[in-house]
Length: 183
Image 1 (cartoon, helix red, strand yellow):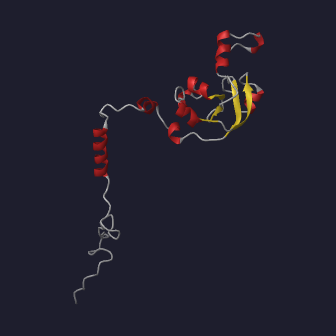
Image 2 (cartoon, rainbow, N blue to C red):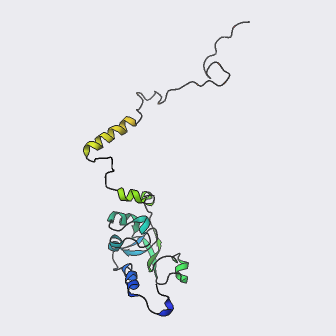
Image 3 (cartoon, rainbow, N blue to C red):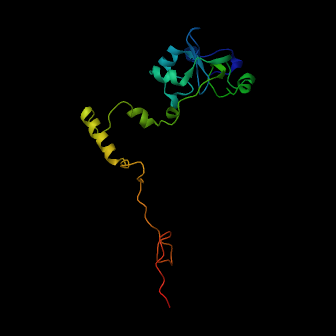
């Protein structure tokens, strides 16, 4: 962005700023991570300009609904990053746009912990999986085989009890002691 003292701005930069300003007054939502306000359609079309690397909302209405909220209060328009108002609201490193003062909601934990590889592989079968109902059934059988079985009765313990003999003792703890030989 050109310094503000010059009084001019590159038209491409101005268009880039306009792209991320709300283009309407209905269906406004705020990003839960950075608080940027745009319409739901803009979040779907462009994603969040500040959170592209982590939330990847572009093209996914479900991710937009999960990562944005219509429940926000107040807004501030950021024109010049680094100005007093941007520093006061914690926006000094954000791009120009409209930001909510407070946003209510939380980003689902699984979205915050997703890696790039998980996002790329989402929805596509892995290299060793063929997909289809047969593989799902065989996978379910493998899971059932690996799962420990439930006890036959509620009183039967799940694990066998193995007596532990402390060093130096010839009988397990709790076992009846053998009668000592008379001397």
